[in-house]
Amino acid sequence: MTAPLSPTVGNPWLCHTVRIAAITPEISGVATYDFEFTDPDAANRYQFRPGQFNMLYLPGVGEAAISLSAHPAARRRWSHTIRVAGNVTQALAQLGTGGVLGLRGPFGSSWPIDDCRGRDVILVAGGIGLAPLRPVVYRLLAERSHFGQLTLLHGARSPGGLLYTREHATWNAGGVAVQTTVDRTAADWNGNVGTAVVLLDRLPLPRPENTVLLTCGPDVMMHFTARAALQRGLPASQLWISAERNMQCAVGLCGHCQLGPEFVCQDGPVFRYDRIAPFFRVEGL
Ligand SMILES: Cc1cc2nc3c(=O)[nH]c(=O)nc-3n(C[C@H](O)[C@H](O)[C@H](O)COP(=O)(O)OP(=O)(O)OC[C@H]3O[C@@H](n4cnc5c(N)ncnc54)[C@H](O)[C@@H]3O)c2cc1C
Figure 1 (cartoon, rainbow, N blue to C red):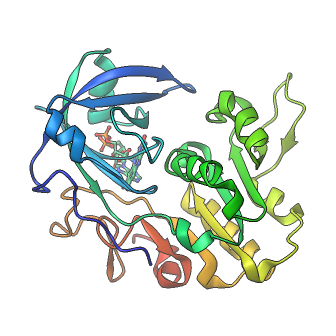
Figure 2: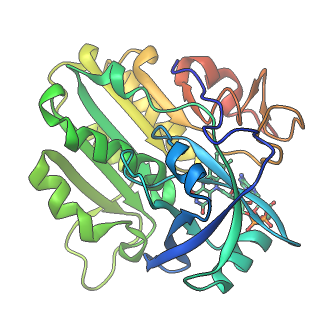
Protein backbone atom coordinates (compact mmCIF):
# COMPACT_ATOMS: atom_id res chain seq x y z
CA MET A 1 0.00 0.00 0.00
CA THR A 2 1.34 3.40 -0.94
CA ALA A 3 1.65 5.45 2.24
CA PRO A 4 -0.80 8.32 2.70
CA LEU A 5 0.84 11.72 2.53
CA SER A 6 0.33 14.56 4.93
CA PRO A 7 -0.94 17.74 3.35
CA THR A 8 1.98 19.46 1.71
CA VAL A 9 0.79 22.93 2.60
CA GLY A 10 0.92 22.55 6.38
CA ASN A 11 -1.96 22.27 8.84
CA PRO A 12 -4.63 19.91 7.41
CA TRP A 13 -7.39 22.09 8.90
CA LEU A 14 -6.07 25.26 7.29
CA CYS A 15 -7.96 26.28 4.20
CA HIS A 16 -5.89 27.91 1.49
CA THR A 17 -7.51 30.35 -0.88
CA VAL A 18 -7.47 29.34 -4.52
CA ARG A 19 -8.71 31.20 -7.59
CA ILE A 20 -10.43 29.57 -10.57
CA ALA A 21 -7.94 30.15 -13.38
CA ALA A 22 -9.82 28.25 -16.10
CA ILE A 23 -13.00 26.23 -16.57
CA THR A 24 -13.23 23.55 -19.28
CA PRO A 25 -16.71 22.12 -19.89
CA GLU A 26 -16.48 18.33 -20.20
CA ILE A 27 -19.76 16.40 -20.37
CA SER A 28 -23.25 17.40 -19.26
CA GLY A 29 -23.06 18.67 -15.67
CA VAL A 30 -19.29 18.17 -15.46
CA ALA A 31 -16.47 20.67 -15.90
CA THR A 32 -12.75 20.75 -15.16
CA TYR A 33 -11.66 23.63 -12.93
CA ASP A 34 -8.03 24.72 -12.82
CA PHE A 35 -7.19 26.29 -9.46
CA GLU A 36 -4.27 28.60 -8.60
CA PHE A 37 -3.22 29.38 -5.02
CA THR A 38 -3.39 33.05 -4.15
CA ASP A 39 -0.46 32.53 -1.74
CA PRO A 40 2.74 31.93 -3.76
CA ASP A 41 4.32 30.08 -0.83
CA ALA A 42 1.45 27.55 -0.71
CA ALA A 43 1.69 27.19 -4.49
CA ASN A 44 5.40 26.43 -4.27
CA ARG A 45 4.93 23.76 -1.62
CA TYR A 46 1.86 22.05 -3.04
CA GLN A 47 2.37 18.58 -4.55
CA PHE A 48 0.07 15.61 -4.89
CA ARG A 49 0.21 11.97 -5.87
CA PRO A 50 -2.21 10.50 -8.45
CA GLY A 51 -5.35 9.28 -6.67
CA GLN A 52 -5.30 11.89 -3.90
CA PHE A 53 -8.08 14.42 -3.27
CA ASN A 54 -8.63 17.90 -1.88
CA MET A 55 -11.45 19.26 0.26
CA LEU A 56 -12.97 22.25 -1.55
CA TYR A 57 -14.69 24.81 0.66
CA LEU A 58 -17.38 27.23 -0.41
CA PRO A 59 -17.91 29.73 2.46
CA GLY A 60 -21.43 29.56 3.87
CA VAL A 61 -22.15 26.38 1.91
CA GLY A 62 -19.77 23.59 2.95
CA GLU A 63 -16.96 21.33 1.84
CA ALA A 64 -16.73 18.49 -0.71
CA ALA A 65 -14.02 15.94 -1.43
CA ILE A 66 -12.77 16.22 -5.02
CA SER A 67 -9.96 14.23 -6.65
CA LEU A 68 -7.12 15.87 -8.49
CA SER A 69 -7.37 15.22 -12.23
CA ALA A 70 -4.24 17.26 -12.92
CA HIS A 71 -0.87 16.33 -14.38
CA PRO A 72 1.16 15.05 -11.39
CA ALA A 73 3.97 17.40 -12.35
CA ALA A 74 1.65 20.43 -12.32
CA ARG A 75 3.28 23.33 -10.52
CA ARG A 76 1.04 26.37 -10.97
CA ARG A 77 -2.50 25.19 -11.80
CA TRP A 78 -4.24 22.08 -10.48
CA SER A 79 -7.21 20.55 -12.32
CA HIS A 80 -10.27 19.04 -10.64
CA THR A 81 -13.07 17.52 -12.72
CA ILE A 82 -16.36 18.11 -10.92
CA ARG A 83 -19.91 16.90 -11.39
CA VAL A 84 -22.71 19.09 -10.05
CA ALA A 85 -24.25 16.92 -7.30
CA GLY A 86 -25.49 19.06 -4.40
CA ASN A 87 -24.87 22.21 -2.39
CA VAL A 88 -21.10 22.67 -2.74
CA THR A 89 -20.74 21.64 -6.35
CA GLN A 90 -23.77 23.72 -7.36
CA ALA A 91 -22.33 26.80 -5.64
CA LEU A 92 -18.97 26.14 -7.33
CA ALA A 93 -20.66 25.92 -10.71
CA GLN A 94 -22.07 29.44 -10.12
CA LEU A 95 -18.57 30.86 -9.77
CA GLY A 96 -16.92 31.88 -13.00
CA THR A 97 -13.25 32.24 -13.86
CA GLY A 98 -11.62 34.40 -11.20
CA GLY A 99 -13.95 33.13 -8.45
CA VAL A 100 -12.29 32.20 -5.16
CA LEU A 101 -12.82 29.28 -2.77
CA GLY A 102 -10.96 27.36 -0.07
CA LEU A 103 -8.85 24.24 -0.48
CA ARG A 104 -7.43 21.80 2.09
CA GLY A 105 -5.21 18.96 1.04
CA PRO A 106 -4.03 16.87 -0.62
CA PHE A 107 -5.37 13.93 1.37
CA GLY A 108 -5.40 10.17 1.16
CA SER A 109 -3.51 7.31 -0.39
CA SER A 110 -2.41 7.12 -4.02
CA TRP A 111 -2.30 4.71 -6.94
CA PRO A 112 0.73 2.36 -6.74
CA ILE A 113 2.40 3.58 -9.92
CA ASP A 114 5.91 2.64 -8.84
CA ASP A 115 4.72 -0.96 -8.31
CA CYS A 116 3.50 -0.98 -11.94
CA ARG A 117 7.02 -0.62 -13.35
CA GLY A 118 7.91 -3.50 -15.64
CA ARG A 119 4.32 -4.70 -15.66
CA ASP A 120 1.28 -4.48 -17.93
CA VAL A 121 -1.23 -1.99 -16.58
CA ILE A 122 -4.99 -1.92 -17.11
CA LEU A 123 -7.04 1.09 -16.05
CA VAL A 124 -10.81 0.58 -15.84
CA ALA A 125 -12.84 3.76 -15.43
CA GLY A 126 -16.60 4.24 -15.21
CA GLY A 127 -17.91 7.72 -16.06
CA ILE A 128 -16.35 10.47 -13.96
CA GLY A 129 -14.26 7.75 -12.29
CA LEU A 130 -11.73 8.53 -15.01
CA ALA A 131 -10.92 11.82 -13.23
CA PRO A 132 -8.65 10.36 -10.49
CA LEU A 133 -7.07 8.05 -13.08
CA ARG A 134 -6.15 10.87 -15.49
CA PRO A 135 -2.99 11.74 -13.47
CA VAL A 136 -2.02 8.05 -13.76
CA VAL A 137 -2.40 8.22 -17.55
CA TYR A 138 -0.13 11.28 -17.60
CA ARG A 139 2.50 9.51 -15.45
CA LEU A 140 2.40 6.36 -17.60
CA LEU A 141 2.80 8.45 -20.75
CA ALA A 142 5.65 10.47 -19.26
CA GLU A 143 7.54 7.29 -18.29
CA ARG A 144 6.21 5.03 -21.06
CA SER A 145 9.37 2.93 -21.47
CA HIS A 146 9.17 1.72 -17.84
CA PHE A 147 5.89 -0.15 -18.34
CA GLY A 148 4.60 -3.04 -20.45
CA GLN A 149 1.27 -3.06 -22.29
CA LEU A 150 -0.91 -0.15 -21.19
CA THR A 151 -4.69 -0.17 -21.64
CA LEU A 152 -7.47 2.16 -20.57
CA LEU A 153 -11.01 0.74 -20.64
CA HIS A 154 -13.49 3.57 -20.22
CA GLY A 155 -17.23 3.02 -19.97
CA ALA A 156 -20.10 5.48 -19.69
CA ARG A 157 -23.88 5.28 -19.69
CA SER A 158 -24.08 6.95 -23.13
CA PRO A 159 -21.60 8.40 -25.65
CA GLY A 160 -22.13 11.86 -24.13
CA GLY A 161 -20.78 10.57 -20.82
CA LEU A 162 -17.31 9.63 -22.06
CA LEU A 163 -14.73 11.86 -20.42
CA TYR A 164 -11.67 13.64 -21.88
CA THR A 165 -12.41 12.35 -25.41
CA ARG A 166 -10.37 15.26 -26.82
CA GLU A 167 -7.26 13.69 -25.22
CA HIS A 168 -7.83 10.06 -26.21
CA ALA A 169 -5.98 10.32 -29.56
CA THR A 170 -2.89 11.73 -27.80
CA TRP A 171 -3.06 9.00 -25.16
CA ASN A 172 -3.33 6.32 -27.88
CA ALA A 173 -0.41 7.83 -29.80
CA GLY A 174 1.66 7.91 -26.60
CA GLY A 175 1.16 4.21 -25.93
CA VAL A 176 -1.93 3.95 -23.72
CA ALA A 177 -4.48 1.98 -25.80
CA VAL A 178 -7.88 3.54 -25.10
CA GLN A 179 -11.03 1.49 -25.56
CA THR A 180 -14.43 3.04 -24.90
CA THR A 181 -17.86 1.53 -24.46
CA VAL A 182 -21.36 2.74 -23.58
CA ASP A 183 -24.34 1.12 -21.85
CA ARG A 184 -26.82 2.74 -24.24
CA THR A 185 -25.98 3.41 -27.85
CA ALA A 186 -26.93 6.52 -29.87
CA ALA A 187 -27.65 7.15 -33.56
CA ASP A 188 -24.13 8.39 -34.31
CA TRP A 189 -22.27 5.81 -32.15
CA ASN A 190 -20.32 3.09 -33.98
CA GLY A 191 -18.29 1.91 -31.01
CA ASN A 192 -18.67 -0.78 -28.35
CA VAL A 193 -21.90 -1.30 -26.43
CA GLY A 194 -21.81 -2.93 -22.99
CA THR A 195 -19.94 -2.30 -19.77
CA ALA A 196 -16.20 -1.86 -19.33
CA VAL A 197 -16.22 -5.34 -17.76
CA VAL A 198 -17.15 -6.74 -21.19
CA LEU A 199 -14.08 -5.02 -22.64
CA LEU A 200 -11.97 -6.52 -19.88
CA ASP A 201 -13.35 -10.00 -20.61
CA ARG A 202 -12.26 -9.61 -24.26
CA LEU A 203 -8.85 -8.06 -23.59
CA PRO A 204 -5.89 -10.34 -24.34
CA LEU A 205 -3.88 -10.78 -21.14
CA PRO A 206 -0.54 -12.30 -22.14
CA ARG A 207 0.85 -12.32 -18.59
CA PRO A 208 -1.86 -11.90 -15.93
CA GLU A 209 0.58 -12.68 -13.13
CA ASN A 210 2.51 -9.60 -14.19
CA THR A 211 -0.44 -7.27 -14.73
CA VAL A 212 -1.76 -4.55 -12.39
CA LEU A 213 -5.33 -3.28 -12.63
CA LEU A 214 -6.49 0.07 -11.24
CA THR A 215 -10.20 0.87 -11.26
CA CYS A 216 -12.46 3.76 -10.30
CA GLY A 217 -16.18 4.14 -10.91
CA PRO A 218 -19.48 3.05 -9.39
CA ASP A 219 -19.06 0.39 -6.69
CA VAL A 220 -20.95 -2.19 -8.72
CA MET A 221 -18.65 -1.66 -11.72
CA MET A 222 -15.52 -2.01 -9.58
CA HIS A 223 -16.94 -5.16 -7.96
CA PHE A 224 -17.56 -6.86 -11.31
CA THR A 225 -14.26 -5.57 -12.70
CA ALA A 226 -12.39 -7.15 -9.80
CA ARG A 227 -14.32 -10.39 -10.19
CA ALA A 228 -13.55 -10.55 -13.94
CA ALA A 229 -9.87 -9.78 -13.32
CA LEU A 230 -9.57 -12.51 -10.70
CA GLN A 231 -11.22 -14.98 -13.09
CA ARG A 232 -8.66 -13.99 -15.75
CA GLY A 233 -5.83 -14.89 -13.37
CA LEU A 234 -4.76 -11.51 -11.96
CA PRO A 235 -3.67 -11.88 -8.33
CA ALA A 236 -5.95 -10.05 -5.84
CA SER A 237 -2.86 -8.25 -4.57
CA GLN A 238 -2.51 -6.55 -7.99
CA LEU A 239 -6.03 -5.08 -8.08
CA TRP A 240 -6.57 -1.57 -6.74
CA ILE A 241 -9.79 0.39 -6.37
CA SER A 242 -10.64 3.96 -5.41
CA ALA A 243 -13.54 3.98 -2.95
CA GLU A 244 -15.85 6.97 -2.63
CA ARG A 245 -17.74 7.49 0.60
CA ASN A 246 -19.49 10.47 2.15
CA MET A 247 -16.64 12.45 3.65
CA GLN A 248 -16.45 15.37 6.05
CA CYS A 249 -13.26 15.92 8.04
CA ALA A 250 -10.76 14.18 5.70
CA VAL A 251 -8.39 13.52 8.62
CA GLY A 252 -9.83 10.33 10.15
CA LEU A 253 -11.71 11.93 13.03
CA CYS A 254 -15.39 12.20 12.17
CA GLY A 255 -16.00 8.60 11.05
CA HIS A 256 -18.37 9.52 8.20
CA CYS A 257 -16.31 7.69 5.60
CA GLN A 258 -15.64 4.56 7.63
CA LEU A 259 -15.67 1.35 5.56
CA GLY A 260 -15.28 -1.64 7.85
CA PRO A 261 -12.08 -0.98 9.82
CA GLU A 262 -10.82 1.58 7.27
CA PHE A 263 -11.28 5.32 6.99
CA VAL A 264 -11.58 6.14 3.29
CA CYS A 265 -10.13 9.62 3.86
CA GLN A 266 -6.87 8.38 5.41
CA ASP A 267 -6.43 4.69 4.57
CA GLY A 268 -7.95 5.29 1.11
CA PRO A 269 -9.39 6.38 -1.20
CA VAL A 270 -7.06 3.99 -3.07
CA PHE A 271 -7.14 0.49 -1.55
CA ARG A 272 -5.63 -2.80 -2.54
CA TYR A 273 -8.70 -4.85 -3.38
CA ASP A 274 -7.98 -7.80 -1.11
CA ARG A 275 -7.80 -5.41 1.84
CA ILE A 276 -11.23 -3.90 1.28
CA ALA A 277 -13.17 -6.64 -0.54
CA PRO A 278 -14.94 -8.10 2.55
CA PHE A 279 -16.52 -4.71 3.35
CA PHE A 280 -16.88 -3.29 -0.12
CA ARG A 281 -20.21 -4.83 -1.10
CA VAL A 282 -21.85 -4.86 2.32
CA GLU A 283 -25.11 -2.91 2.19
CA GLY A 284 -24.94 0.32 4.20
CA LEU A 285 -21.17 0.39 4.55
C1 LIG B 1 -12.28 10.65 -2.17
C2 LIG B 1 -13.37 11.27 -2.99
C3 LIG B 1 -13.07 11.82 -4.22
C4 LIG B 1 -14.09 12.40 -4.98
N1 LIG B 1 -13.75 12.95 -6.18
C5 LIG B 1 -14.70 13.56 -6.91
C6 LIG B 1 -14.37 14.17 -8.16
O1 LIG B 1 -13.23 14.14 -8.63
N2 LIG B 1 -15.36 14.79 -8.84
C7 LIG B 1 -16.66 14.84 -8.38
O2 LIG B 1 -17.51 15.43 -9.05
N3 LIG B 1 -17.01 14.27 -7.20
C8 LIG B 1 -16.07 13.64 -6.46
N4 LIG B 1 -16.41 13.07 -5.26
C9 LIG B 1 -17.81 13.09 -4.83
C10 LIG B 1 -18.16 14.41 -4.12
O3 LIG B 1 -17.35 14.58 -2.97
C11 LIG B 1 -19.65 14.37 -3.69
O4 LIG B 1 -20.46 14.35 -4.85
C12 LIG B 1 -20.00 15.55 -2.81
O5 LIG B 1 -21.07 15.15 -1.98
C13 LIG B 1 -20.45 16.78 -3.56
O6 LIG B 1 -20.80 17.76 -2.59
P1 LIG B 1 -22.15 18.60 -2.72
O7 LIG B 1 -22.23 19.45 -1.52
O8 LIG B 1 -22.19 19.26 -4.05
O9 LIG B 1 -23.28 17.51 -2.72
P2 LIG B 1 -24.05 17.00 -1.41
O10 LIG B 1 -25.05 18.03 -1.06
O11 LIG B 1 -23.06 16.57 -0.38
O12 LIG B 1 -24.69 15.66 -1.89
C14 LIG B 1 -25.40 15.44 -3.08
C15 LIG B 1 -26.01 14.06 -2.99
O13 LIG B 1 -25.01 13.04 -3.08
C16 LIG B 1 -25.03 12.22 -1.91
N5 LIG B 1 -23.64 11.95 -1.60
C17 LIG B 1 -22.78 12.75 -0.97
N6 LIG B 1 -21.55 12.21 -0.96
C18 LIG B 1 -21.67 11.02 -1.59
C19 LIG B 1 -20.75 10.00 -1.90
N7 LIG B 1 -19.46 10.08 -1.58
N8 LIG B 1 -21.21 8.92 -2.54
C20 LIG B 1 -22.50 8.81 -2.89
N9 LIG B 1 -23.40 9.76 -2.63
C21 LIG B 1 -22.99 10.85 -1.99
C22 LIG B 1 -25.73 13.00 -0.86
O14 LIG B 1 -26.33 12.13 0.09
C23 LIG B 1 -26.75 13.78 -1.69
O15 LIG B 1 -27.85 12.97 -2.01
C24 LIG B 1 -15.43 12.45 -4.49
C25 LIG B 1 -15.72 11.88 -3.25
C26 LIG B 1 -14.71 11.28 -2.50
C27 LIG B 1 -15.05 10.70 -1.18
